[in-house]
Length: 181
Image 1 (cartoon, rainbow, N blue to C red):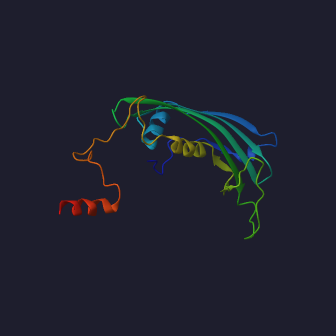
Image 2 (image 1 turned 90 degrees about the vertical axis):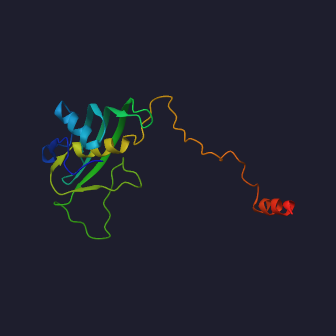
Image 3 (image 1 turned 45 degrees about the horizontal axis):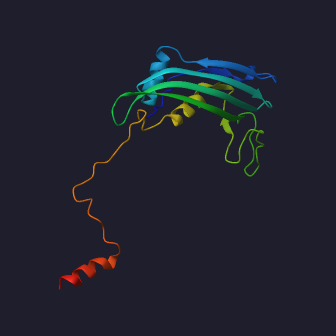
């Protein structure tokens, strides 16, 4: 699965972000697509595109929303035929710069309107942020670990003797022994 070295990087300086935010388009090209495929352990990554929306809530709070679309080709786990898949994911991150503000233990950090009950803000220690990192994370989570070609079923062959009916209850075996005598 994914290694430590990121296959695709897009650094962005959050200090350049104004209150109006920024909209960016990211797309991996050529060798980057091949690196992503090796990193994610899939046959081919045909496309990896994202539209990213960044917002600045305060000097140390930012929000990232992105729509990720990727096209991949994997081997079917049953037939080894190529299987094409389309991955579409919405990515949301609340980013908090820990360098600027140190909060005391027990003090809560307010979340944005888009944050759910189980979401925790991502603490960052620099205003230089890799926009590709959360996209790659969601991409890796969305990959089907057992891709199958359409209509292919995985069937376990039956062992000889499996067709014999199991006793109905534990006492059925005792009853069969009693009937033999």
